[in-house]
Length: 283
Length: 249
Image (cartoon, rainbow over all chains, first blue to last red; front, side):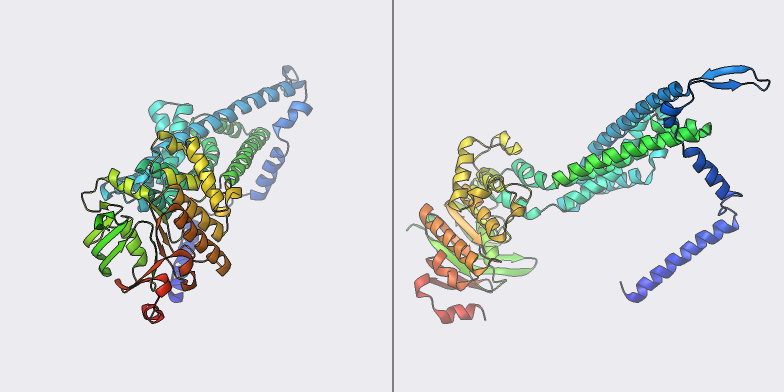
């Protein structure tokens, strides 16, 4: 690209950004609200003491009283939060199951589509064009939209979440797989063919070892991404951590939201550490 | 010697690729056990000639007979694979399977004769493993059997590529620039190794060579190509220096 072309492109981009800001401002949608700092400080203060802490330091006899001073209910905060922690662990497990099974299904669906769209394999256009279209559609529709769609069809629960994750990540898997296949060293494949190996032997001895580490690496990356994605799915009733997030937000239980975030961050960090080690071992 | 008994029998061979004439009317007879060096400028057609002999590309005209088998459109895939199993090749660029060990790369040489399903999982019979280990030792690479080939030096990778070709137990060995990108000492070592291995195993050898001082180490006969035609064919100890220089002008 010429220098003038690049400058024109940058000018076009600056114009688009200015247009976005200008129109949103005119429609009054670019406001931070009336008291953003106060709201932020109040939320931060609420979340600064996660409900998790109550398991050890909560009031064992928290009394709820009526206006005239009568004791309506006595709550053991330690026991209540311990029960919530149990439900939280169960939700983490559900989220992990949704992400794992959804990723596996998405990867299985994506593999033949990737083989059809990888340019170096030279699939016929009547096969590669519909495959590329399916992958594009899958990537274009957000997991949440797929979630709403599947909840509408098969009802609330983890199965809808699994299908939503599979439907969206199929597109991502397919694109990454096709790119991995395109980086294959065709020369080593020709060399194995040249020793008199059959097509199957050539595939498993030359192509597969070359492409497998990248396929596994991409799969781990998308799987990890899907763990984060599947928490959002709870918002539309597909189960898991998202369901607890919806409840906590609806009841303004910020300390519980903080606990849920701690669980989510720990889950993703643990998976990230494990997958990074596995990727390093493979590459 | 009867024409059919030659390891390579090529007559009036022509090849055009992408609208460009690569080989023009090449005729060549190579006896079994003969060691031939192919020389010529870049683009003279040396690598293409090797690819035609190994049936990786098909010629447009003339006839090609390798190890008694005549190439043609009617040659069934199974027979083609059998023929390829008899022709060991070391490619320009080596084309090893990175991420696999030296031993695994060498073992692939037996895929032409070992057809069991276990080979799809890269599991080989014990006699083949012992043979591969022996060949690795013969190219002085036994200590690197378990090393991934992408962690080896250029010279070491060259030896693994040669070992893979030898693992085929070929009757014909073809080497395309087997000493390219090596330092002079390593190039001399590899050239001597190739020449000696071919002699010891009684292999017919066709080697593309760019470094002229290496010719006596590898070959008994030198064939020169210029612009796709055969321009020189002499024993290595009777080479006409003027003819050689004319190849590179």
